[in-house]
Length: 356
Image 1 (cartoon, rainbow, N blue to C red):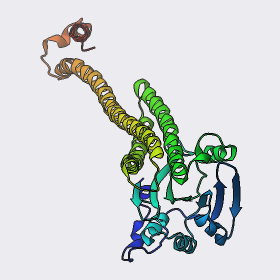
Image 2: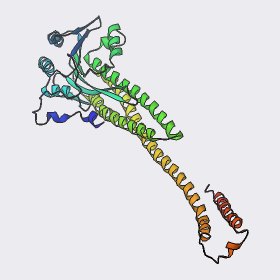
Image 3: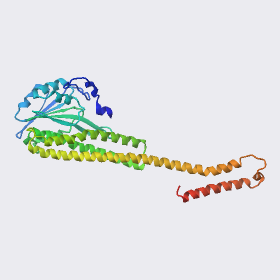
Image 4: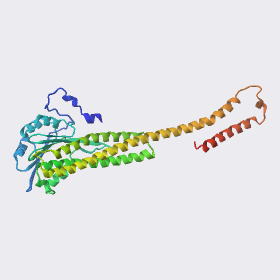
């Protein structure tokens, strides 16, 4: 958990600002570059291997989406940044994949960082991938870690088929659509978490075990990670909505408000899950404590019953010569009768007091 949140940022210690050092999961292979040029009339989609093939997108008359998978090649990122006029601190944030979701406005572009979340392969696991979005006047550059795909396939399909408003709008609407696709996928993550919480709750009520406790702690860790990824996003969307920039059209602000509402719903759901998990942990501890109390009550009752019986047995275990009952013919069965009567009387008393 801690490793996932920190990813060893100490390797940048002592380096000057703007130094490009990749921090994150290492990816084998070369960077993949996909370009989609589109306008209302048509779409041109291609995958390139040479960085020079995407440099013309800066001055294109169409809207260009340059989608880059992999941020481990710092030389490529640096060359691309020089051509598009990206600030060195922006490039530094792109290759540093432990950024807090944020938004920064520059003269010729807006830089947005957010986390793309999706369910992992293991139970209750949430996978995260940083997405950096550079929004220019007529282009979008998106940087992904390229670990397990992305959530943009429906968006690409809308561009290809011309459904919706996307091919009639500019680069700012494309940036909104990417943010909206990422935020919508948060609801899928929350639904999976909700199912896991319900299953754990059923086990907690029926038969809590140490496995239930481990599941609770696992869910709490994922909720903390999810909260860390989503909470700053509210500030990002709000700042985009209020930003007076020529790069964001007034018509797009309405859609940003809709995304803001979705983010608020997600945050409310996360907080609800946190409260539910905290209550479930209290229930688990109370259940275990009650179970222990029941065991101790039974043991205490047994010990209490045997205390007078032990006393009687101890008295008649003293081998004095002149004990009156030693020569009595019915002494042994009489003592057994007394001991049984004491035990039955005590059981009846405990039952009457509802201790049993």
